Amino acid sequence: MKAMLIDATRCIGCRGCQVSCKEWNNLPSEETEFFASKGYQNPRDLSSKTWTLITYNEVKVRNRFDWVFGKLQCFHCNEPACATACPVHALEKTEAGPVVYNASICLGCRYCQLACPFKVPRFEWEKALPKITKCTMCADRVEAGEEPACSKACPTDAIIFGDRETLIVEAEDRIRNNPRGYVHHIYGKNEVGGTCVMHLSNVPFEELSFATDLPEKSLTDFVKHGMQPIPFVLAGLGVALGAISWIVNRRIENKEKLHSEGGQQ
Image (cartoon, rainbow, N blue to C red; front, side, top):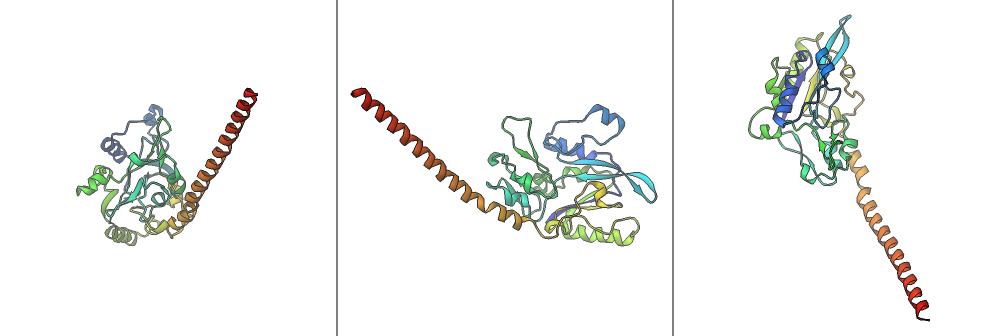
């Protein structure tokens, strides 16, 4: 299974990955001139137009404040809760690693947004018929034997692409060879059953706005329990609406019958 390893200690905040993502996926710019001119994080969060985002985090590193850059995008979970929550299977985990999305069958219900432990999927609020959007880990490129656009564009190898197990060994080697330079944790190795986008950092991951209270067990079991009643609720709703419709129609028929009988007399 393919994956990406993102090393915050090597990221220089150039946003080349962010630009290449937009170029490959034909996503429009939504930069704010003020923030861009000041060198701030831009835009402020993921959106339907921004699927990968370099975050600017001023944190204390070895007794002085410095910039540490993070990368937000879909984590492509090994057992994605979003795919489990989707009632029409618009989201699917591929054998290669990416979690792909089929917009043509999406209902726009946003269950995936509720299920995602990383709060990644975004809704197209600006459209009349909105859908869900998110990073696809360039599944089309991966299928063709290429690496994702973001990792290919990175000038410092802060993002590397390869087999997941090989990347875990690489991450462990980096921590072992530089124990003072890294937090001794590979974010994504075990979180919610493991992910195909993993991170290394020299500061606590909460400083990069990553959730650090996630269980190691996949959330799919919890999602399944939440989704199981839905078919029965919908079936019950259909029966209830059918009964209401029958009662209303009967009353209308009775009123019309009484009216016609009164007219005849």
